[in-house]
Length: 419
Image 1 (cartoon, rainbow, N blue to C red):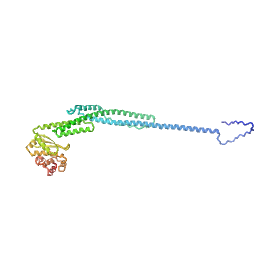
Image 2 (cartoon, rainbow, N blue to C red):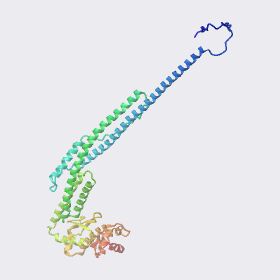
Image 3 (cartoon, helix red, strand yellow):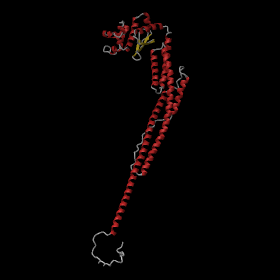
Image 4 (tube, rainbow, N blue to C red):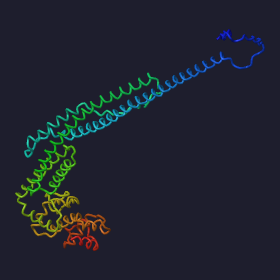
């Protein structure tokens, strides 16, 4: 808009008016209309620019916070996968190691089984099944050894959140988890093979054990001439083998061999017992053994006969006793041949010596053990046996007086309570 103005036409009938004089003085400080538009345009531009800047800044901040959240989630997920892979690998590594140790122990215990001749009372198929399982376990465990696993120490996040740093860390973590999963699958396969082979050994060994123990039980009741000692050995061998089965663990091959050995021991003792009955001296020995058992108050007695006992033979009465508190309480009495002659001749000293030996065995009885261990005897075996024989009515040299001296009256009285 300029200062030039054009007057509006007036009606013709209006009278002409005078032109007012021009005012050259300073106009009042009132903004002209022309100057009002410029400040309004600058205000709109500032508002638009500020809004744009805020939008750009807000978008940048939002993008930053969004990237931070995405980066943290990616790293957290990768770390979780690695932890899961490490946990699984650690578990299978431990179980594989235990399986290897178990296989080694089983094979070691069965090492003598393959060279042991199969006894007639064990079926060939049963023995072969164990041998085959043993060979399979040997193959499955060959070359394997325990390799420990230490979980890697990996940070849960990158030191910075730059895209390339986060991407590299995530890739490394996922690659490590993949490697651990590959190792886990390999070790899991080895563990599976070991477990299957071990189970076959346990099953076949249990079948062998069942047959051996069943035959052993028959031997215990049938071999009446065998010694109690041989039967005690077999009883323990059978019980040990049964304990392996009940514990659902790998059968110890050495225990299977122990059952076979114990069965052979009872059979040998049975044969010896039957042969002893054919000895011309057996009738006299049987009388002496019967007398000893009659005064033993239920203590099981085994007998051995030798020409010399403790280095004493012809012209001497000699005997020894080995007693055992376990297995119901039992003892083995060893007597020399000279005692047979004295018994036949009716020598009271021969009978007194046998009584002395039975006296040794009495300490396994619950009612007599406290007397033997008490202050009167203090565990003195020979004085106890001598006093017991005297209390039984044999106050003669053969009761032990000649060899060990005469006990005190108090000792005889105390030993007499064990009758």
